[in-house]
Amino acid sequence: MEIEEPQILLEETFYVLSKKSDTFKVRLTPKGLHLIQDPLKEQLVLLKDIIGCQCLRGKKRSTRNNCTCQSLPRSDSLQVVEENSSEKDDTDVSAYLYIYAYIFQGPKKRERNIITLRFRSFDKHEDNHKEAQRWRCAIKNLIKGEPLSNLNESKHRETRRLLVLCNPKSGAGKGKQIFQQKVAPILNEAEIPYDLYVTKHFNFARDFVRCNNLFQWTEIIAVGGDGIVFEIINGIFERPDWAQIIKSIPIGVVPGGSGNGLARSIAHHSAEPYLPAPTLPAALAAVRGTSESMDLVRVETVSQIVYSFLSIGWGLLSDIDIESERLRVLGGTRFTVWSLARLIGLRSYKGKLWYLPASTVPVSYNSINSEREGSTLDFPAEIHLETEEGRPRVDSWYSAHSRRSAYFSTGGSSYQSTTDSGLGDGDLPSTVTNRRMYGPAPQLPSVTAPLPENWKCIEGRFVMVHASYQTHLGEDCLFAPEARLNDGRIWLLIVKHGASRSQLLQFLLGLTTGAHANENRDASSYIELIPVNAFRIEPDMGQNGYITVDGEHVEYGPIQAEIFPELARVMVP
Ligand SMILES: Nc1ncnc2c1ncn2[C@@H]1O[C@H](COP(=O)(O)OP(=O)(O)OP(=O)(O)O)[C@@H](O)[C@H]1O
Image 1 (cartoon, rainbow, N blue to C red):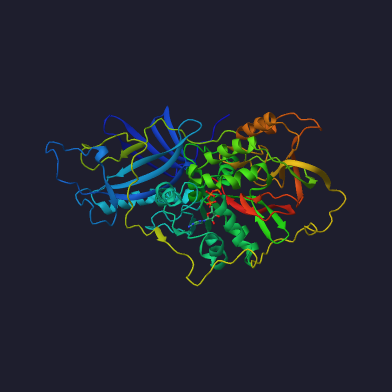
Image 2 (image 1 turned 90 degrees about the vertical axis):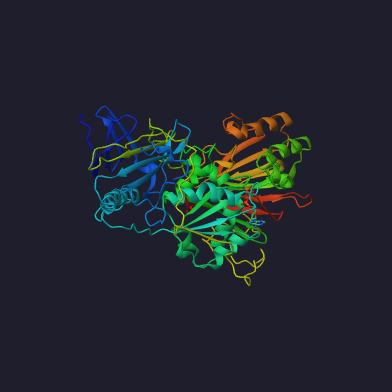
């Protein structure tokens, strides 16, 4: 069978310095950028791995430390500036096109690669710039899935604008740093504009989302832990126009907290490598603008309604979550330390648990890839190629830079704005009790009313009841391996009183890998993991304890939960 060649949209021949005889044919097709050294050696940078490209100009060389006999520009000293910079080198008529791609280096790691194309076939910079600009427009349009009709347009119109809400206190207190060092450079490479707001206090993000015109942004990016995502989602449900916003403005999450359950679950869902660069999947999702639907759970207690995307807990895991707050400075390690402490002083809680077993067979989700398709290159992290000059070629070059090379400055770019405050001074955060929640109509009776007879009930003592609708509760807690972002199921884990400490230790260790979910258990087992559509917990009020929703502490007392499939949208890489 003949393999169909992709349509060639642009093609040019470029040269490499160190091997003067080496020519590269560079081709742009709807599949990506083909670097063809000879017909047998072709490498493809897939379009979905390219995040953006910029036209730049050679920078004036400093005369200091310049060796007079050195006539060739060395690649490692190449410096470029923006087209309109006063520092541009007027003697260099070339136009440089920087193409930024995040490419798999082995199955579990993506790294940044830069492909530089130097256009210098024409005698005037304007003509070389025009040529580079044609390539830039074509690449940008392909990335966005737009038609390639206007390749000579000098400006590419960006229709997206991100709202970034960053919690400076999340996790080890590095939220702002994480955004500025790991995410902003990638947004700048992709030329995606954003407005950054740094949260000032508890519920700042919730009130910001409730009070502002959100339609000026196309997506909302949370930088922090699951707490900031919880605030954003619940802020949306405090708006009368919640239905429009929750469906049309996807939420992205850049992990900066100590738990990061949602960020980890999204990376797992997309089979994107998470460690050692957990912010990369989120940054790639933000530049690509791709999103998927996600289930939300409506949670009702006696005094409030909230919308949850991650978990509800009563007993052991919630005790660990809340009581380990005092060890915040340890980051994620606080959970391990406190788990051991809680196992030694094991508690159990008396109460009733009702649940409605999941009725539907989950759809098979083809979007889950066990292995992710992506480009892999034999080239170094930076490859510089240039066209032939009108005059004899003397200064071609090729070089390899470290993958950790510094980001090129796009100083003066209008793509970045930083604002410290989002709410006026008069906008005081509202308290839990005076919040009015909107949202879809519940199918369940109220939390204090009797339940229908088809619900199952367990009465007794529990070490814990914990529910999740995501695979991961935290970066290293694979709680429900079979869960999907949008499977319409709540995964209910029940640990009854009577389980031995060694069983519990085994269970807690299994949470890191998901092994706890694979164990064969009979009906008399103390530990069960059941998919349900809804549940209710009624703790015995003679004893105190903690109940958490998405890791946030809520009042101790009756609580019920009901899943609403595919209610929200989240950004996925
Ligand atoms: N400037 C601030 N000062 C103090 N607290 C803040 C500030 N901004 C936000 N918060 C609160 O910090 C809490 C925790 O935030 P977040 O979830 O981002 O981090 P985390 O708790 O470390 O992560 P995780 O929830 O994943 O464990 C949230 O409830 C949020 O309201």
